[in-house]
Image (tube, rainbow, N blue to C red; front, side, top):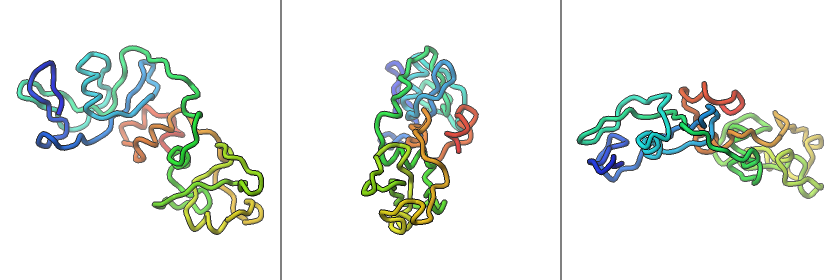
Length: 191
């Protein structure tokens, strides 16, 4: 529920008060660069405060006793927000590795629950914990490869691992990218 300038609460999910907000909204900078994913509630507040405009809409409306608003799917900030370029490269996390690799095992190509991360060159063999040496791996492939090199195991990653692009956070926040977002995302982020 959201309140609009002291008016009655606005239902943001079509359910009774107290239920969670469904859906995510892609946030673009004023330059149309994707910078974040937020809740419908947060997007609605940004639009109501004239800090953002709605570019793409979802079906249905957000309603209160006195107000009906379009349900945002993609919004664009009115003013440009400066984002540090290296913010996505600072920390290697399991979620970021899985998102970069599209939640797909880089050895067998399966999308499985319980994916792990694997050091391509094992740490026991001098491999470092850097983006260029870590890939998503299903548990069976990770066990099969063990502490062997890709050459020894005859298991090579489908893609050469590298640091993720700046939109990796979008893949983390929303593993299934809505079709309406794809026009606003670089091809690598939508894949």
